[in-house]
Image (spheres, rainbow over the protein chains, first blue to last red):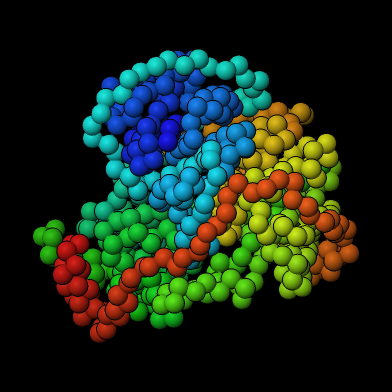
Amino acid sequence: MKVLAFSHSMDLALELVSAGRELGDVSLLVTSDQEGWINEVKGAKEILLCKEMDSGDQEGLVELISGLAGDYEVVLLASDRRGRELVGQVAHRLGASSAVDVSSLSVEKGKLVVERMTFGGKAIAVEEMGLPAVISVQKGKFRPPEEGKPSVREVGAPSVERRIEVIGGKEKPKVGVPLDKAEIVVAVGRGFRKKEDLKLAYELADVLGGVVGATRPLAADLKWMEEEVWIGISGVRIAPKLLIVVGASGQQQFAAGIMDSKVVVAVNTDSKAPIFEQADYGVVMDLYEFLPVLTKKLKEIKGG
Amino acid sequence: MDIAVLVKQSLDVQELRVDQDTGKIYIEDAPTKAGDIELNATEEAVRLKEKFGGKAIALMLSTWGASGKRQKEAREALTRVLAMGLDGAMLITGEGAERGDTYMIAKALAQEIRDKFGLVLAAEGSEDNFSGLLPARLAAELGWPYVAYATAIEVEGDYVKVTRSLEDFEEVVKVKLPAVISVTQEINKPRVPKLVEIVKAKKKPMDQKDFSPPVEPKLTIRELKVPKVERKRIVIEGDVEEAAEKLIQALKEEGVL
């Protein structure tokens, strides 16, 4: 099976190459702004270099990928927002099947079989896809390949009627260690009565060397925190070795975002909160009493 | 310019019961509703209509079969968005829709949108499946531009100016109409309809249309499984001091401190 892969991010592109190798030979498309990746990409059979296309050109990419895809059975894209935006458009151009955020993929009797989370994390759908197929792969599920130097072939860019013009933009403020890469996360919810009180969570995260994330209401409705730290199915999905959830009830959208965490601790005054079903260790207490004591004791151990 | 809002009849995942031991998923018992982010799309459509004129209509293609319960829920979901200020709604139902994948549904919806609307608003993802594939496919089917993850939309003549939120970047684009745009929850705060608006919404036009599959689906769901999430669910007892000490001890034994 022949696989075409593309991502805006090199880390994700390498994960796609690994995912694609489970199906066959992988050609990785690289745009002009990504030319520097050529010497770093391993594991792909070949690199298709398009020097006349920038990865910021969404309409151009849809056209370019759809045009190249005729030679491939499977197109793999990343599950970041720019990647997901392409999946449906490319699939429909090709009359292909599509799936996003797949965690596994295999071939059975000429059909592609993928697994992905659905129903807000309450179920895993096993889907049979006709070929050709366009798929985005869940972040962090495949390790980058370690060897194999690809050949490089240049491809031309199609001419595109452009209806989308980028007229501005700015980098979002950096939040330090990205949540999805953090080893220790303290997640805060509506149990905090005001924004200033979040310092209790930051102090706990500091002593643990972790980062602070938030539930949807804190990030989106109250705007106490940046959107980038919003944990959940429409926010960031995290997989730390230790997650301490403080003052969050455990709504399904949030629960789906923390499923891959190794050890989960929940602190909540309401013993019936669903979060305790999703936790390894539950502390039924007022966070305003418990957090300062926990932080102080941890400081003593860590010698701080 | 008239606006179409895509409203999916989604399973209410909060209410969905699954049995970890038997692996059974009680889909039939769970209610359906309009997704939360579709309320944001509705709110945005109403705001744009109030500011720039035109009509805003909800489109729903029910994929839950012809049972009375699901049909009633579909109409309730549409009444919910009508009460927020939309002018009308169209409900498409019929045999074969339950096998529909995004390929089939995009083809069916495009027939109701082409030449009738200048802007389609959708949620970045549906409440129950959250793939975000449908608006992208619909745009491709219509041959219209597609911009996802909008956090602000302004109409400027034949264009819309869209601010959109990417992971590390906020981008502003100018898009030629007609277009398909998906929104995130940050775009606005959906109004909560008053009782009188809900009563009035029941009198607004709701067209029913029979569905006939325009194409065969490209994807089938073979199986739905319950994910195995094994949690210890140990409750730490004692006063504040004891609980903190016990928790630290437990985390040390887990090897995560």
